[in-house]
Image (cartoon, rainbow, N blue to C red; front, side):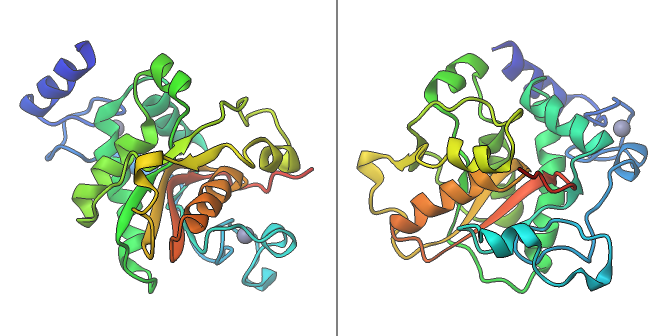
Length: 243
Ligand SMILES: [Zn+2]
Ligand SMILES: [Zn+2]
């Protein structure tokens, strides 16, 4: 309730940067200084998982995607998970900085709009397990998906994909353990078994690290009949996680 009244108050008060509280012209943006401190992910990068490459000659697809292709088709990740990009993700996830979601969604929408990829039928946020949702009281991916809904004009299907298995945090795991950890963590809600049939889906998450979570979600969605699954995440870890 306190958080909700905070959001309403924020919308009524003069617009401020959600990160540093500097006065800005319009709600839903960052100030110029915070915006400039983000590190955009530019080409060259892996065309599949958006991993930034050091050199133009590194090819089109990264080694990880060649050895274990993800179940999603393409990933859009506008910002590097470092410094201010990392702070924003953590502020939304752990600090409940809801006011940051519209600004983050605006940045996420840009590469989706400018890509040559197919149009999407629905957004699907990466779900939290209900225990974690109870503890945190909100799902940061769902907040981003709701903000993206406004940006892209695509409906967000929030209840079809569920996290049926409570898995330990991925944070301390190496690459192969991350894939194993989430392998059968997701399923489709019993009363939503047909909603993904023939649909082109844009999966929404806050961070992409190895892509293990997004890949497990995409596998479940494709098994439920999805035609294609792309991913949009605000930030991407720039170093490949190995092991
Ligand atoms: Zn700022
Ligand atoms: Zn890749």
